[in-house]
Length: 635
Image 1 (cartoon, rainbow, N blue to C red):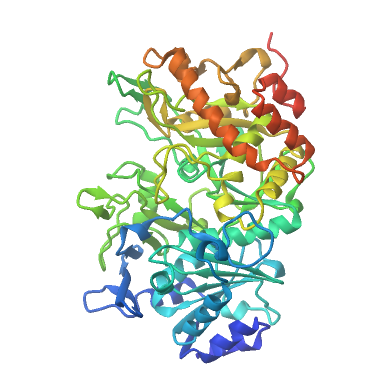
Image 2 (spheres, rainbow, N blue to C red):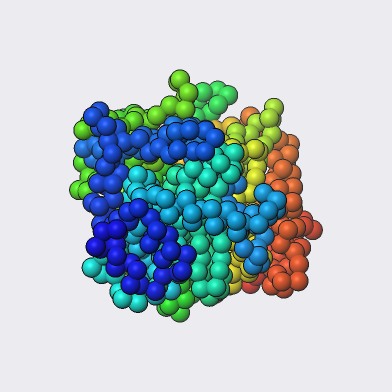
């Protein structure tokens, strides 16, 4: 144990933590990103490759990942394609506190305690790396510790980038972890048949997270998210799953948009500038049946000032009493997916930032060679000719251009949903127009069902229309769905000045659109000063679950017509296929919402869900939650 690491034993640590740190052959207490970068490639071979390997009983030596140092950071690539994205079923609960999640006993047929003890015993035999951080806002209630094998330095680096790292000299004498993350990769093979498993074990005054894999998504990122959600459950506040951006128009008006949704729903893309064609126009979409393309001319786009990329603390101490939602970033870095960047020039801003970063980055699932420059568009392949759909780069927040520091007040909350193509021959739920304005009650329902949607690139599998779960953060929460439903409903009621919109991506009817709908909507809302529309300006959507739509919009002299807002008018779709798609969407809502009914749901929430199950109208939703929504009619 290094002299710095010995200081850990002077802190008020949990007894199990103290015991394993005392027994381990060596302990390195990291206090900076540079310390972890050194660990990430410490055992590199002559060719510059550091193999993250473990001896696994009954199997032998297993290499989990290859790591190397490149000119612009650390590149890590997993041997198994399965490990290159998050398994949506990775979380289990190891304790017996209230939860709607699968418990360890339910999934594995035995109590977690013996495996917990085995984990500690294994860690006692390893050379360890340890560092301290704060989960979210720095406070005594969010002090946390990471303990991992020191050859997995790249994993520890990812967590330290995402959540920060407390320098050794800044560790307070009364540092007492309220959360500890233990990393034990071989258990994936010895206990869990090769699957990603993360066990949350909630104890008195301590939240333990056992990470039995080395992909940062389920544990280094979403594991910490689970810790924050657990704190919020106890203290009655929410950590939203959203990207937030302050949009500044060419006329210097500012609008803050927070974009929520399941993985792949467009959160990271909300922070991107719209992708332009070589002639400077925006491609709204391409008709999959006729090949026709529709372009849109936008001479000058708005400036973007990013606020959050994925996790936003909505702590009561931030509220200003102005009727708006106030939030602040819960992360120190962003876990950016770049599967859409498949060639040079796709996203010049992001490409330039990552090619010549002011400090080293962490690249995952991207080709990296020792001493060379890692390029975002060179994705590794899951199989010959099949690029990995989930290449990532971890970018420190402080180096992101124009990033907003501190809290912001949100004007518009949008919900993103991935939609498949819809046509008369193949009706689907791809009937969502370019954007829809939602009454607050309906906006709450969309946050309960949080559709994962079509062709999700971030997780292992997606079958049809499935739910990411309440708030779209449910895969990371440890408690009960109804508690989060109540928290989200109260949040909406307490922020009456916020407006709610729904935005699809990938397809609008038979048109392939990518993420262009949210980029166009973002520009439009900013120029309008928000999503405030007069009642006589909006039309009820044919499917009540889709709220209202404007029918068409004009921006900077260009018009986008009703084919992109009222999908039933597309000749290749028509009213009959639209109604079949609406039935799919309605059945999905009914199936998901029934799980929330019960005595612990707020009475207002009970009435809103019953309204949906009974086929309620838009007027019904407005009456049930009587909050400002539509402005007075325009004359």
